[in-house]
Length: 141
Image (cartoon, rainbow, N blue to C red):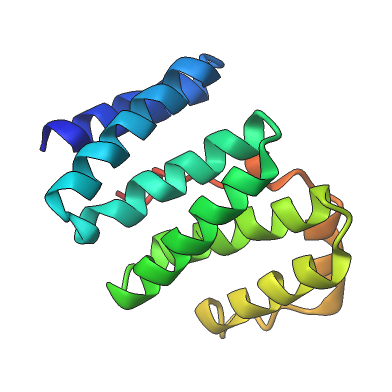
């Protein structure tokens, strides 16, 4: 539980522009969770690390954390975190100049929004938007 609190504090620091300290706290939480084998909590801290690493433009770290978080969120049936990770992975792809990859992640999101029928026009809007400014990672908890 202490590691979850550390992760939450790290995320709050990232949201208040204390990025380095926030990432350090989240990495500390990650280390404890890995040591304890707390996989069922790991995807949350990995999502937060993905977000932080995107903000500091460490895209390889962001991609690794986001990919692992997505896999674990799907495995543990956490749809909110899976959606957040798909948005973040799309943003990483855009920042890398990989429009095809970004579109692939956004198309994967359609499974979570069947009623919306995400169109190519909506995907184009997402591709032109910094998704770190619109994705509320903690809004559904």
